[in-house]
Amino acid sequence: MLTLEDIFKSFKLPLTEKRKKLIAEAYEFAESAHDGQKRKSGENYIQHSIATAITLAKIGMGSKTVAAGLLHDVPEDTAVTLSELEKNFGKEIANIIDGITKLGKIKLRASREEYFLENLRKMFLAMAADIRVVIIKLADRLHNMRTLRYLPPEKQQRIARETMEIYVPIANRLGIGEIKEQLEDLALQYLNPRDYENVKKLRTENYQKGEKYLKQAIKELKKELKKSGVPVIDIYGRAKHLYSLSLKLKRYDMDIARIYDLVAVRIIVPEVADCYEALGIVHKKYHPMVGRIKDYISLPKSNGYQSIHTTIFGPDGKILEVQIRTQKMHDEAEFGIAAHWIYSEREKMGWKKFIFKPHGDKVPKKELEWVRQLRDWQKEIGRDDEEFVEGLKIDFFKNHIFAFTPLGDIIDLPEEATPIDFAYAIHSEVGNNATGAKADGKIVTLDHQIKNGQVIEILTSKENKTPSRDWLGFVKTSKAKSRIKRELKKEEGY
Image 1 (cartoon, helix red, strand yellow):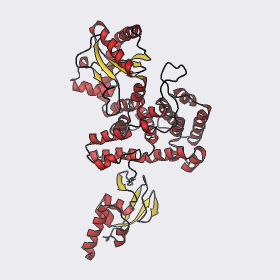
Image 2 (cartoon, rainbow, N blue to C red; image 1 turned 30 degrees about the horizontal axis):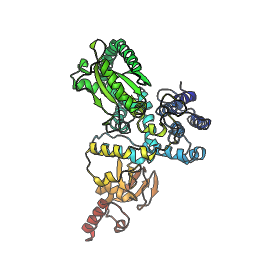
Image 3 (tube, rainbow, N blue to C red; image 1 turned 45 degrees about the horizontal axis):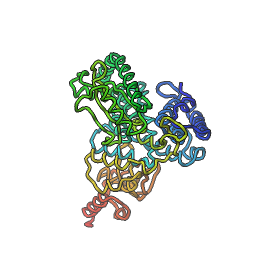
């Protein structure tokens, strides 16, 4: 059973008494709020909250984010209100939790049209003016995937597909490899169980065969690097994740002998210059395979990933991949944008390794790769809109709002849009026959300005109804205006 102490042990950054106090208070509050609630697994609900908080602590998030992780399901699943959370934990944490609650409404519907998936990804990011909201949702989803076996098969399929099509691309775009790879493996288990079992078996058999060889290679490389005076923070072996192995096996007709990075040696060094010096030592000891050297330090991947990859003929001529990177590159590869909150260079007071150091919970603007990452993402999606790209900011959708239909579909609208704009965005007939509207279950006027994340229900008349000329005075979308004018012209000669 997970405890508060497990959260403290998972932290990547030093914990002051003040931070420990905040997390302990959030834990006690969440435990009390969820008292008596059980998960489908039969566990006390608080176990999910703790697991979410542990993931956040492990990827280097700050105490406020971890506290919000503990409290993230409180407003939605208990009688405690958001205002009570704000009273106890302040506006910043309450705002994060409010964003999480809104994101919780997003569901992947049966349709898989690309425009919908694009809209859904945009929705995720647009709803989260504070990027910590998205990171907490990723941690929340990770634990939900780990306990997916307790749900009915149809829910398993829906949640696994949602994970692969929405959460995995977002984790990748944020560069959080630690979460992305786990989500992919967990989703594969439900989306293609036969593939999952076959690949798992192949990996286990081949890793066990190569484990002794891997240890030998690490021992010899460690000795050579030490002899040459190259400083090494860490050197270890890692096995390829199941999903990426599955994709590679399909490319190579399931021939695992052609996959050279099933296991890899990872060398972590302090400085960029050490990476290239270490590469020279590795190649001096073992012959490199021609055409298999990839320098992602000089040319990083689109999500910011940096490392040198080389494939060598190791001990006894066996083929092995070696990855060389700095500690900073490693942390950013594993934790992505989360590392920006807490990463600093070596302490000046004698620390021999790079360590995490608190810088507060806001990402330093100079370090953000956000705009570049989203620009790359838009290119991948295939949208060519210079105005859109130029307008990207951390709150890059501030001129847009996203509202839900009662069935969970997402409607993208301009700021200050009204229920009438919403109605015409669904269908002309819905707009023409609109008689009233509800926002989050409460009756609102037809000129009500919709807020981001609201669930809007349009009340219609069964009899054919003509739009009101007054609507033209407050609608915001060109679609609504043109449809209203067309109907008025048809009915009244307008």
